[in-house]
Length: 188
Image (tube, rainbow, N blue to C red; front, side):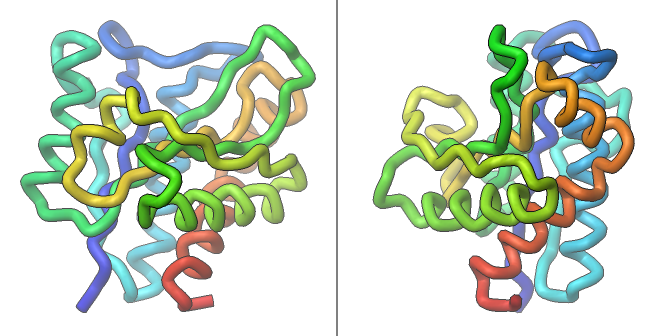
């Protein structure tokens, strides 16, 4: 039986719930691309069923931040996903901030070790640091999903080197996430 993973490409392409922008990149574009590339890797492995929150780069979910977030968790819950992974790109006022990090609802959750493997995989694939996994029970997508959920900040748009890699080789981020997921489920 295939493992059902819901990939949420964070933010909308414009208007409500748009993401961060820096170094000529928009978070919502990066997350869309990485999500599609990761979906393809997961499907090719034959171990997973995958659904995306955004099925086209211009798809807008909801009419406000709240309804955009609700659309994502409602879709995952209605499908009966086994796991929920929300993909984001970070931003900081410190231009040297670097690396990937994960967020989960609780330290003892089943999502915690999944997030650890994913950020380790991203770090190995990109050579940027793994910054750790943090508990954030206030994040909507972590508290409103019925399955283990993690939000992954793949890297910093505000870091010039990371933004360059996101722009020129988003597959490095997708491959790192895929490696982490495969390790977590014992397929690698």
